[in-house]
Image (cartoon, rainbow, N blue to C red; front, side):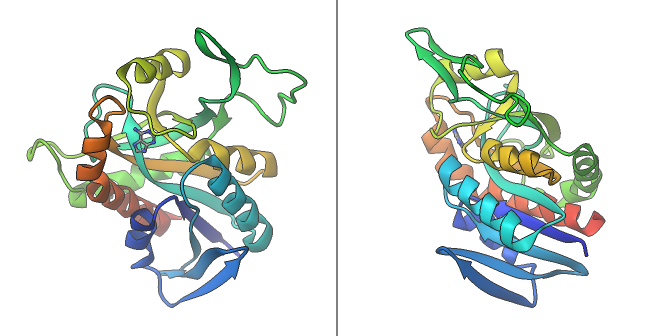
Length: 247
Ligand code: ADE
C-alpha cells in the first residue's frame, strides 16, 4: 500500500504540514515521534528529525525500518547559493552531496579523497528520484498561486532544480558559499538532505528533497534566516502537500 514519509528538521517546518494530516496518531520510537495519518486519501507518516546529519540519519533509518514507506520527502528551508534565488524560492534537489566529507588540508576540504571507501553504496552525489522531481514541478504549477512572496510583491517565488549540499554547519560566509558553488555546482545548502539521501539510496527507497530559501548563506544569513524562516517553511510545506495530492 502506498505510504509517503515526510521528514523535516525543525518544529515549524513539520507543524505546517501536520495541520493537513487527519486523523493522526503518534508513535514514539527511541525518543522520536512519528505521526501516522492521512492527507486526503494518501497514507502518510510525518516526523521531525532535529537539526543536522546525525539526527536526520537516525530518523531516516528508524523510518525505513519501522514504517517501510514507498517514498521519502524531505521538506524545509535552505541557504541559497545560486545568486538568482531569493527568500521564499524553491530548490528541488536533483541530487544531494555531503560538503563536509573528505580530506581537510590548509586549502580546505577536498572531496572524494578518502580511503578504503565503497563508491558503489557511497557515491559523491546521491541522485533524487526523477519521477518525484517531475511531479514536484507539476505540483509547483499549482502551489505557486499560494506561495508567500518576499522582497518583490510582483515576483512569484520560483521553483528550481539543482544540486543541494549538506553539512553540519550553518553557512554564513561568502567565501565558503562560493566554494560550494564552484566545487559542487550547488544551488542550495542545508544540514540534513544528503544524510537522508544516502540512507534512502542505500536502501533503494525513492527520495526527494524540497527546500525553500530562507537566507543567502553569506554574512547576512543569520539575520535573513530569522526573518524568512516562517515564509520559507510555509512555501516548502505547501509545495510538499500539493505533491502528495499528485502521488
Ligand atoms: N538552512 C537554512 N539556511 C542555511 C544555511 N545558511 N546553512 C546551512 N543550512 C541552512
